[in-house]
Each structure stands twice: as C-alpha cells, then as structure tokens.
Amino acid sequence: MDEQETLQQHKQILEIYGFLLQWTISGVETRALEKTASEPTKARSKGPKAKTGPNREGSWDSSAQLETALDKMSKVLKLKLARIFVTTSERDTFIGLFTKPVYYILENEARVKNTAIRMHCFRVLCISVKHHGHAFGESVQDDTSVAH
Image (tube, rainbow, N blue to C red; front, side, top):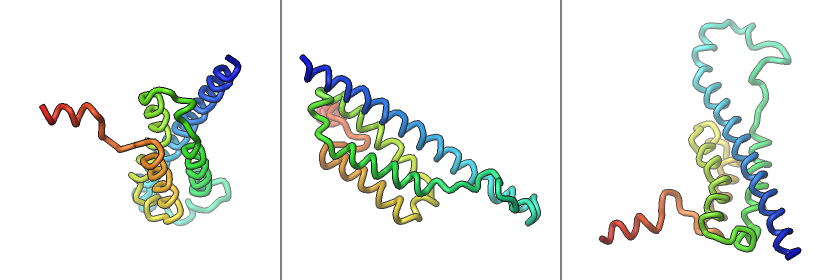
C-alpha cells in the first residue's frame, strides 16, 4: 500500500508540473504571437526614440527558457510513465500536456526559424511517439469507424 501512495503522489506532482508547463508556455507563446502581430504597426507609428530605454516592455527573450522547458519535458517523457499512469487515457492526457504546447510553439514562424527550439520541439514529439504511442489526431475509434 505504501508503494501505491508513493505512485499517487508522483502522479499528482507530475500532473501539476505538466499543467504548469503547458499553462506557462501557452501564455508566453500567446504573448509572443501578439507581439509579432503588432510589431509592424508599432514600428511605423512610433519613431526610433520609442525603442530606447532599458525597461522597454517586450524586451525579454523567452527562447532560453523555452529551450530549458522543452529539455525538461523530454526528460519527463523518458520516464516509465506506464507505472504511474496505468490507463491509456490517463497517459495520453498527460502526454498531451507536453505535446500541445509544442504544437503551439511550432505555430510561431519565428520559433520555427530558431534551430535550437525547433530541435527541442522535435525531440519532445519524437519521444512522445516512440515511448508513448503519441500520434496527433489519430485514435482507435477513427480507424474502426472507417472500416464499417
């Protein structure tokens, strides 16, 4: 019974960690996409003096933190999650906490141009497919409904 409690604790901590990573990355990427979309308009309407100043909003580059987060995601996905997440649906939901933000990152053209981030994203997706059977948009029900 002690092992079951330990596994439940690990499961809860991993779920919280996965949710927080997804929430944070989604927020950062939403902000980055908004910034990218509004840049051309701001550049034309404001003069060159508008960009000066050490505390200018939006000067923080999240690329290094994204690389770190993606690296940590890869490490978590390399764990033997089948012991912690017993059912396939639990495991798929947990894997989704890591893959959804990766797909969201890959929607940003500037992020895709960054080789380090692109490779980290691909690594997360490859581990998800190799170790956990992740296949975006594919399910067993879809296969059976086509056959009938």
